[in-house]
Amino acid sequence: AQSVTQLGSHVSVSEGALVLLRCNYSSSVPPYLFWYVQYPNQGLQLLLKYTSAATLVKGINGFEAEFKKSETSFHLTKPSAHMSDAAEYFCAVRGPGRSQGNLIFGKGTKLSVKP
Amino acid sequence: DVKVTQSSRYLVKRTGEKVFLECVQDMDHENMFWYRQDPGLGLRLIYFSYDVKMKEKGDIPEGYSVSREKKERFSLILESASTNQTSMYLCASSPLDNQPQHFGDGTRLSIL
Image (tube, rainbow over all chains, first blue to last red; front, top):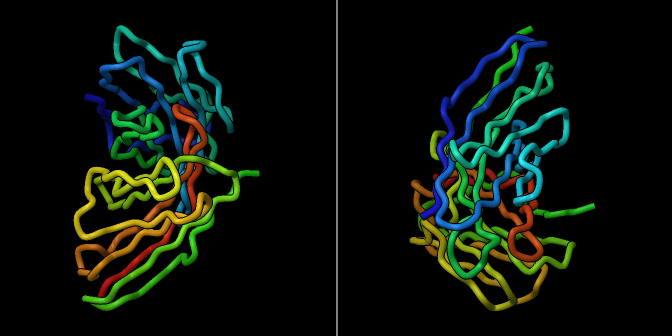
């Protein structure tokens, strides 16, 4: 069965510091993995996706994630945090069922950026 | 650009009412989804549809039904609203399998 665990419901960093948001997955099939961002009072926006090509995936707004099969991880990073990065971030893995469009989401990590 | 439109951003209804949440996508996507989002619980799938008139239950379908009469429109129905259905509801669509989902801005529903 597929599942996603995001470590840390809240992460706080200083502006200019490294951002690291952790995601571990469990999947009985080759995983397709996604990171989404949600700004206040908005829907989710795709940051990046892993679909079995390159293990290092670059996304929008300077974010990237590295797929590590041995660690079943897909952590999200950004070298230098900006105030505008404050939002909630969700990791997701392809789910089971007839429609492989299903995604299973983690519970989210809220990122705060201090000036 | 991809567009998923939810009919209301905020909605207030009374216990026992029948509530309709509408979602329209303009991208000719096959798959459409309804989630609810609650603090600390992330997104939970209520129902999804992979074709017109086709639907499948997600993780928490109790108390909800859906309708997909046209490809672009996917409606969520609360048959008899209850206070525990107060939540943020998110609609999404995706093209073929394994492609990212595109989300609407959400409907914040309050049941009084």
